[in-house]
Length: 350
Ligand SMILES: Nc1nc2c(ncn2[C@@H]2O[C@H](COP(=O)(O)OP(=O)(O)OP(=O)(O)O)[C@@H](O)[C@H]2O)c(=O)[nH]1
Ligand SMILES: [Mg+2]
Image 1 (cartoon, rainbow, N blue to C red):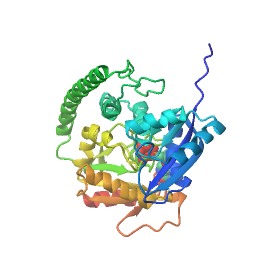
Image 2 (image 1 turned 180 degrees about the vertical axis):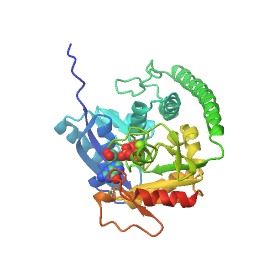
Image 3 (image 1 turned 90 degrees about the vertical axis):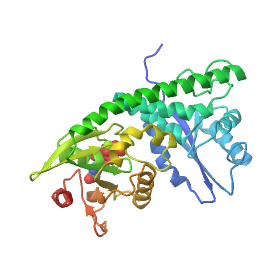
Image 4 (image 1 turned 180 degrees about the horizontal axis):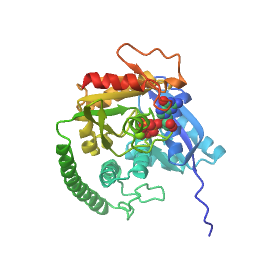
């Protein structure tokens, strides 16, 4: 027996553009998500098509091409940058002979590894169960990814029905637990009543926690990785005699699994009930404009689309020529540039 850490999984990433043109460069973000899960990218494949293949999502020719690539690269997993139905995962695994994951699964796994607080853990567990439920099958092959043991038992309709019922029961139990945690959170909220609430929102890795720590002198985990923050932290801030609370929370990403939005209901409550949103954008990211649209879309979805936003373009040190749009502010949370101006804007709003 060796004590060595397991070798990272080697993955082939697959992008599928349905009625849109994708290139392998569009798989950069998925590669980063995979790296966060200790999955190394060894190959990238894209296919653009008019519609989804009913068996494999991608065409049979592409399936063969990927099979060859798996053999050539010794890949142990194939990761699709789309959400796959359970039946397609099954068909693809049969064709490839290795594990098949989709983007949502990777994101949920990162969340599971990151959750720290009791509430965060419950929320992730709930999201995972909701993701797993429609994907449960009677098959219990070695490639089954039901890691919590449920669904690992034998095939057969009866067993499957039983497993589904177990999961549904577990979902109900988790929902109850979360409701209790939410009650405690509400009490905390009452104590903060009367103070204006300011919330940091933005794409993952845009610098929310770095700015939060700078303004509140807190010590929230901030790192160059996707979804460094999962739990919500709120601190009181005093600004020249005026008081407000500042909240740092989970970042958003393109194609956020919808299970996430439902499960993170209570975390997202903080955002929904904010008086002002500081929308943090990484202006050094080439996809900054797209990321702003994604964040606004999620805010719409969670019912926070109407809240007043102050656009804050961060990491200006990395992109000094960036032209900050009217009404927005350019800052560097790390190099402490533009922070006084930002505080002044917040002050004026209060
Ligand atoms: N160059 C530069 N890097 C920054 C700046 N602000 C933050 N960073 C870096 O960007 C990375 C992400 O910062 P975080 O504060 O963790 O970002 P976040 O928005 O909280 O990310 P998640 O919690 O993962 O959603 C870290 O490596 C920071 O050091 C900045 O103004 N300039
Ligand atoms: Mg963070």
